[in-house]
Length: 76
Image 1 (tube, rainbow, N blue to C red):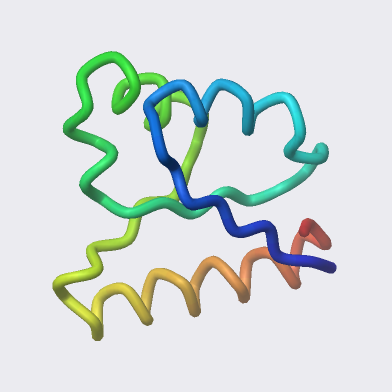
Image 2 (image 1 turned 60 degrees about the vertical axis):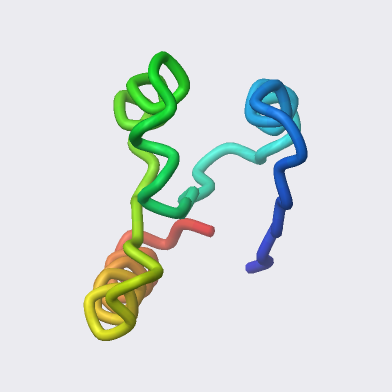
């Protein structure tokens, strides 16, 4: 298992990321990305898990549920 952290400097960074993310990877992104028009729709349709960084408890819960599912389904 590993963690890839990306600090986007431009909207096109997401397109580049898609090329380097390994198969069976579980992407998690900040909820604000949902509101970036086409990028938000594409992110949502691709199965990215969004967390609300302004609601700490809710974000921790989403990450905990995601981690449990990842362990159960043996994904990165």
